[in-house]
Image 1 (cartoon, one colour):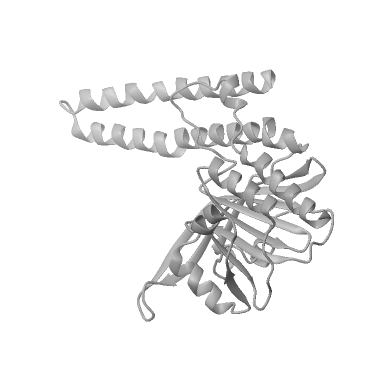
Image 2 (cartoon, rainbow, N blue to C red):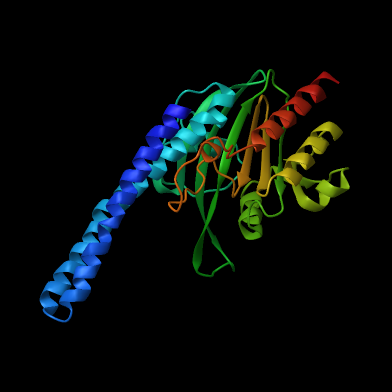
Amino acid sequence: MEETLARLQHQYRAYRRLVLLFIPILAAAVVFAFVNRYVTFVLLAAAVLYQVLYLRRLQKKYQNDFIQNNILCTVAQKIGADHVTEESGGALTPEVLRKAALIPFDEGKATCLLREGISGELEGFQVDLCDATMAETFRLVKKGRKRVHFNSGCWVRVKLSKDTGYDFRLMDVDAVPTLVRRAYYQEHPHYEKGTLPNRNLEELFFFYRPVNTDVVPSSKLQTQLEKLSNYTPGKVALSLQGDTLHIFIRARFLARPISMRSAPSMEALGFDPFPELSYIIRVAKAIEAWQSE
């Protein structure tokens, strides 16, 4: 990690030195404003081009490099992954997310953007993670103007040791906008709303299960889901399909914002962007224990 930090610090200092070159260009533009306005316009244009075409590219590269290394030093290390797929979801594809039937998004290539994909194993479970942004078209009224909602967050898939035989969804009331959620389940009438014994979850989560079934998540599963919900500042949505657990946490990401105001530090590089993963594994363990009862 020390070698990685040294490389990022060198990259950051080089960027800051180049930023300082921006100041003389602006100063010269101010001086020539009283002498030759044409030269002033040329200098201002040069300053803008320098900022947009050069400095922003360097800034973006530094931030992307920091994000990749931050993930590799934290979440990826935790699951034994040695590679981050920056511009895709890796093992998680739009088809995989659609099959999970958890977060609605439109058909088409540009409606599901996946990044920072990583895969590995944690406490005996195969896990895949990525950042996801999904676009869903909806209408406020039946014949009203079409609007688009973007739902962004971190998507996690956990493979269980065996097929549970279950198929249900649990989602925070704010994980998916009400109009989008209602429209989706109207188009999928084979699911119905169920009730949860856990009163706290019943107030905070919607529970959908196949029509004419009486399945109810175990008390251990409800307890662990409640702990995850209480811990994360994001909004949780869960899909259980046989031997596959999908959890999406809205507004939580592997790629966190990187400030250019301060140089990279060991603390920043080692900061875990997604500590919720350990809580998700506890949810998976609760499902496994439910099967053993």
